[in-house]
Length: 326
Image 1: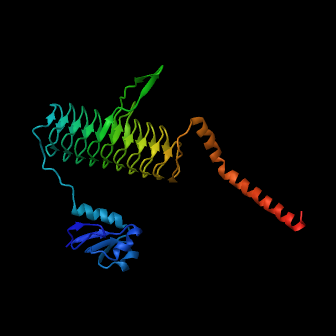
Image 2 (image 1 turned 60 degrees about the horizontal axis):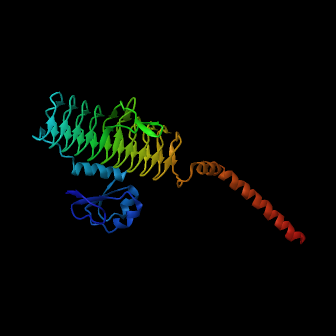
Image 3 (image 1 turned 60 degrees about the vertical axis):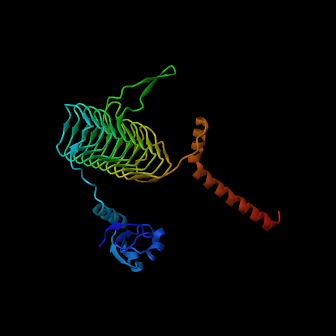
């Protein structure tokens, strides 16, 4: 009988573990788990029962979901919650302590609004979505079905729209919305701005880690995953099935195509429209110097070829000098 999940190193009787990364293969030989999820090529080395899978990590995720399902709320509204009369809340919704729901808010069946959440006017929360705690959804924000929003996330706040007036900044009103599709996850303390004109759109299945900033009018395609501390500037377009690692910076108005992978700490300042893996950044310097150096960097491969050709010519000349005694 399997009752829990643990790592290969620490698992014991009644627990299942998994092997998906070869660097932990040495721990497989000594594991005390009752069973291990692994690939077929590792089965012969497993000292205990095993569950063979083409994708051990995915199988592990499914086992985790089976053993540790999300607890569905019992419904009901905490007495300390404040709900405007024009809000519409399905009977099966659970609303925690100290929540506020503004005018025209709609919360669909099975949703969970955790303690301290604020839903401003005309927010829509789709069926079975979960706001864990202290989540703020600004006016007109739309969440699809089955979304998961972690503590401290802010969705639909004003984008960074400013016009310069002789050195002073004048705020540009942000009149768009933030619209999230179904099954979107947003990590703790992340921020998704509303659109300036038009909407910021996060398509279904997108997964956003903690402390990520998504600027106004950004478009993110289906099932893209974005790791922590990434910043995406206004009006950038991110394709479907992309992977953006931690600490990436994406410039405004940049376009990333589908199936693009950007490695950690990269700076994306131009379009990456073809599928593939991209990386790279340089230390900050005076802008004119940076542009000049980067222009030369683009010529680096050609320069290397020319240097190699010159080296061959020089070697040939030296050989001739030795042969002729010159």
